Amino acid sequence: MPPARADKWAGFFARNVGELSDEGGIMRGVVLAGGLGTRLLPLTKVTNKHLLPVFNRPMIYYPIQTLANAGIDEIMLVTGGNSAGDFLKLLGNGKEFGLKRLNYTYQEGEGGIADALRLAEHFADGEEVCVILGDNIIEGNIAAAARAFREQRKGAKILLKEVKDPQRFGVPVLEGRRVLRIEEKPVSPSSPYAVTGIYFYDAGVFDIIKTLKPSGRGELEITDVNNAYIRTGTLTWDVLEGWWTDAGTIESLHQAHQLVSRTGANKMERIEA
Image 1 (tube, one colour):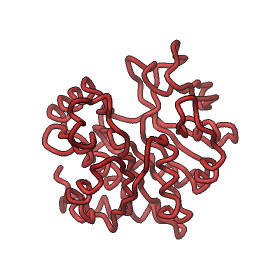
Image 2 (spheres, one colour):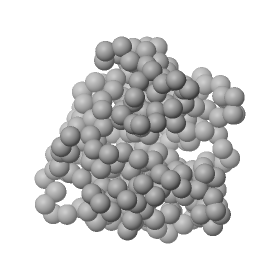
Image 3 (tube, one colour):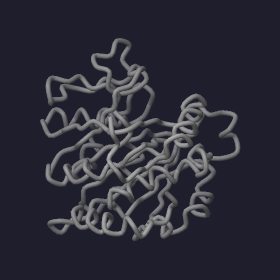
Image 4 (tube, one colour):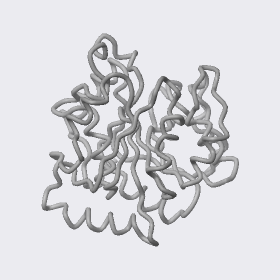
């Protein structure tokens, strides 16, 4: 599907935007596209990893389309490094995605995912946010999850995906539908699920971030944000339909290219198991 919305989907988008703006609020989207991309060297010597091609589109197009397909039309892009101007040149005001507005902000240094999200507080303006990491690409869409989170009214929602190598990711410790905690890259994972880089948060997320202390690697971790919601009993989860991949390593970038070329990405229809 090209960046511009096809006419056949006009009703779908109108419905989703309406559902995401019930009760006077509008869910806003945040795409986190900073980082140095060291796992993709030497490709990232000359550009930000999120500007690298995945099949026939720049990587950054996919997470933006994911948010747009969920009816989210106000998005902030958080970037860093030396390529900030290239994002503006490529994406402009976001009109080709059907966005009402596309804002930009800059993260200095390597402060972590939660630190990057912190920069979107003013943009969020007290509303709920859907946060997606800029290297996350999905086969389907998150429209149903976005609607479910609005009905949840408070807290957070994460999306899980069963993977072959959960030790590479944050892994939830589950007890039925409850998440007891999230373990970051555990040696012995307690479940086959990975926490994908797609998160829904209420406006309280920014207060939580302000209480965080840097991890051992000197960053504010998104896992600590999610565990804070778990402690209050307000974090829920759903399983993401269709395939999911991050494109943050040479191997996963190659996999993303193969998946997109074979099946397409950001599909509007339901993905069959």
